[in-house]
Amino acid sequence: MVRDLLEHGHHVLNVDRVPSAESDSPETPAPFLPAELTDSQTMNESSARAALYIGAVSSTLVALGFLGQLSPGGDTFNTFALTVLPTLYLLGVVTFVRMVECGAEDFRYGLAINRIRGYYKQLAGDQANLFLLSGHDDGLGVFANAAVPAEGVPSTSPSGAWWP
Image (cartoon, rainbow, N blue to C red; front, side, top):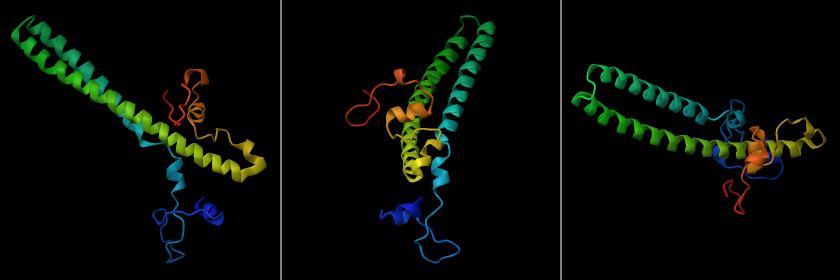
Protein backbone atom coordinates (compact mmCIF):
# COMPACT_ATOMS: atom_id res chain seq x y z
CA MET A 1 0.00 0.00 0.00
CA VAL A 2 2.80 2.41 0.84
CA ARG A 3 4.40 1.70 -2.49
CA ASP A 4 1.09 2.52 -4.24
CA LEU A 5 0.82 5.76 -2.31
CA LEU A 6 4.35 6.73 -3.30
CA GLU A 7 3.72 5.87 -6.96
CA HIS A 8 0.65 8.13 -6.96
CA GLY A 9 2.64 11.09 -5.63
CA HIS A 10 1.61 10.90 -1.97
CA HIS A 11 4.15 11.59 0.76
CA VAL A 12 4.67 9.00 3.49
CA LEU A 13 6.48 9.75 6.73
CA ASN A 14 9.88 8.12 7.16
CA VAL A 15 8.61 6.60 10.40
CA ASP A 16 6.63 4.12 8.30
CA ARG A 17 9.71 2.89 6.50
CA VAL A 18 12.43 0.50 7.56
CA PRO A 19 15.49 -0.79 5.73
CA SER A 20 14.98 -4.22 4.20
CA ALA A 21 17.37 -7.09 3.54
CA GLU A 22 17.44 -6.21 -0.17
CA SER A 23 18.31 -2.58 0.34
CA ASP A 24 20.32 -0.43 2.71
CA SER A 25 18.04 2.48 1.89
CA PRO A 26 15.30 3.47 4.35
CA GLU A 27 12.98 4.02 1.35
CA THR A 28 11.55 0.49 1.45
CA PRO A 29 8.01 0.46 2.87
CA ALA A 30 7.43 -1.25 6.18
CA PRO A 31 4.96 -4.13 6.31
CA PHE A 32 2.61 -2.31 8.68
CA LEU A 33 -0.64 -3.04 6.90
CA PRO A 34 -1.33 -6.51 8.38
CA ALA A 35 -1.02 -4.99 11.86
CA GLU A 36 -3.42 -2.21 10.85
CA LEU A 37 -6.06 -4.66 9.66
CA THR A 38 -5.94 -7.07 12.59
CA ASP A 39 -8.27 -6.87 15.56
CA SER A 40 -7.33 -4.33 18.16
CA GLN A 41 -6.20 -5.30 21.62
CA THR A 42 -9.05 -3.35 23.16
CA MET A 43 -11.43 -6.24 22.55
CA ASN A 44 -9.18 -8.53 24.58
CA GLU A 45 -8.79 -5.90 27.28
CA SER A 46 -12.55 -5.33 27.52
CA SER A 47 -13.21 -9.05 27.88
CA ALA A 48 -10.53 -9.43 30.54
CA ARG A 49 -11.80 -6.43 32.51
CA ALA A 50 -15.40 -7.63 32.41
CA ALA A 51 -14.36 -11.12 33.54
CA LEU A 52 -12.29 -9.67 36.37
CA TYR A 53 -15.17 -7.53 37.57
CA ILE A 54 -17.73 -10.35 37.40
CA GLY A 55 -15.29 -12.58 39.31
CA ALA A 56 -14.81 -9.89 41.96
CA VAL A 57 -18.58 -9.41 42.36
CA SER A 58 -19.28 -13.13 42.69
CA SER A 59 -16.37 -13.67 45.12
CA THR A 60 -17.54 -10.77 47.25
CA LEU A 61 -21.10 -12.07 47.38
CA VAL A 62 -19.95 -15.57 48.34
CA ALA A 63 -17.65 -14.15 51.05
CA LEU A 64 -20.46 -11.98 52.40
CA GLY A 65 -22.78 -15.00 52.46
CA PHE A 66 -20.29 -17.14 54.39
CA LEU A 67 -19.52 -14.33 56.80
CA GLY A 68 -23.22 -13.60 57.28
CA GLN A 69 -23.79 -17.20 58.35
CA LEU A 70 -20.94 -17.05 60.87
CA SER A 71 -21.79 -13.70 62.43
CA PRO A 72 -25.27 -12.54 61.44
CA GLY A 73 -25.50 -8.79 62.07
CA GLY A 74 -22.19 -8.74 63.95
CA ASP A 75 -19.36 -6.24 63.86
CA THR A 76 -17.19 -8.57 61.77
CA PHE A 77 -19.78 -8.72 59.01
CA ASN A 78 -20.35 -4.94 59.06
CA THR A 79 -16.62 -4.17 59.00
CA PHE A 80 -16.01 -6.58 56.12
CA ALA A 81 -19.02 -5.32 54.15
CA LEU A 82 -18.07 -1.66 54.67
CA THR A 83 -14.55 -2.42 53.48
CA VAL A 84 -15.30 -4.63 50.49
CA LEU A 85 -18.42 -3.04 49.00
CA PRO A 86 -16.93 0.47 48.41
CA THR A 87 -13.86 -1.17 46.90
CA LEU A 88 -16.09 -3.23 44.62
CA TYR A 89 -18.03 -0.09 43.66
CA LEU A 90 -14.78 1.73 42.77
CA LEU A 91 -13.62 -1.25 40.71
CA GLY A 92 -16.95 -1.20 38.86
CA VAL A 93 -16.69 2.53 38.08
CA VAL A 94 -13.11 2.19 36.82
CA THR A 95 -14.07 -0.86 34.74
CA PHE A 96 -17.02 0.96 33.19
CA VAL A 97 -14.96 4.06 32.33
CA ARG A 98 -12.19 2.01 30.71
CA MET A 99 -14.66 -0.08 28.71
CA VAL A 100 -16.25 3.10 27.34
CA GLU A 101 -12.76 4.29 26.37
CA CYS A 102 -12.08 0.93 24.69
CA GLY A 103 -15.32 1.24 22.73
CA ALA A 104 -14.32 4.70 21.49
CA GLU A 105 -10.88 3.39 20.56
CA ASP A 106 -12.43 0.48 18.63
CA PHE A 107 -14.59 2.99 16.79
CA ARG A 108 -11.51 5.00 15.76
CA TYR A 109 -9.81 1.79 14.60
CA GLY A 110 -12.92 1.00 12.57
CA LEU A 111 -12.71 4.41 10.89
CA ALA A 112 -9.05 3.87 10.01
CA ILE A 113 -9.62 0.36 8.66
CA ASN A 114 -12.58 1.57 6.58
CA ARG A 115 -10.41 4.37 5.19
CA ILE A 116 -7.83 1.79 4.07
CA ARG A 117 -10.57 -0.45 2.66
CA GLY A 118 -11.97 2.55 0.76
CA TYR A 119 -8.53 3.18 -0.76
CA TYR A 120 -8.34 -0.47 -1.85
CA LYS A 121 -11.81 -0.21 -3.38
CA GLN A 122 -10.66 2.80 -5.42
CA LEU A 123 -7.68 0.82 -6.66
CA ALA A 124 -9.87 -2.20 -7.48
CA GLY A 125 -12.04 -0.22 -9.91
CA ASP A 126 -14.62 -2.56 -11.48
CA GLN A 127 -13.81 -5.33 -9.02
CA ALA A 128 -14.65 -3.21 -5.96
CA ASN A 129 -17.89 -5.18 -5.58
CA LEU A 130 -15.78 -8.14 -4.42
CA PHE A 131 -15.17 -6.42 -1.07
CA LEU A 132 -17.65 -7.67 1.50
CA LEU A 133 -17.50 -4.77 3.96
CA SER A 134 -18.04 -1.06 3.49
CA GLY A 135 -15.21 1.33 2.80
CA HIS A 136 -17.03 4.41 4.11
CA ASP A 137 -14.98 6.08 6.84
CA ASP A 138 -17.87 7.54 8.76
CA GLY A 139 -19.91 6.38 11.73
CA LEU A 140 -22.55 4.62 9.66
CA GLY A 141 -19.87 2.72 7.74
CA VAL A 142 -18.20 1.52 10.94
CA PHE A 143 -21.49 0.43 12.48
CA ALA A 144 -22.58 -1.28 9.25
CA ASN A 145 -19.37 -3.32 9.25
CA ALA A 146 -20.07 -4.26 12.88
CA ALA A 147 -23.58 -5.45 11.89
CA VAL A 148 -25.31 -2.72 13.93
CA PRO A 149 -28.58 -1.73 12.26
CA ALA A 150 -28.68 1.85 10.97
CA GLU A 151 -31.81 2.75 12.92
CA GLY A 152 -29.92 2.16 16.19
CA VAL A 153 -27.06 4.50 15.28
CA PRO A 154 -27.17 8.20 16.09
CA SER A 155 -26.58 10.47 13.13
CA THR A 156 -23.17 12.05 12.74
CA SER A 157 -22.70 15.63 13.75
CA PRO A 158 -21.34 18.30 11.37
CA SER A 159 -17.90 17.86 12.96
CA GLY A 160 -17.88 14.21 11.85
CA ALA A 161 -18.25 12.82 15.35
CA TRP A 162 -20.61 9.88 15.80
CA TRP A 163 -22.31 11.28 18.89
CA PRO A 164 -25.13 13.82 18.54
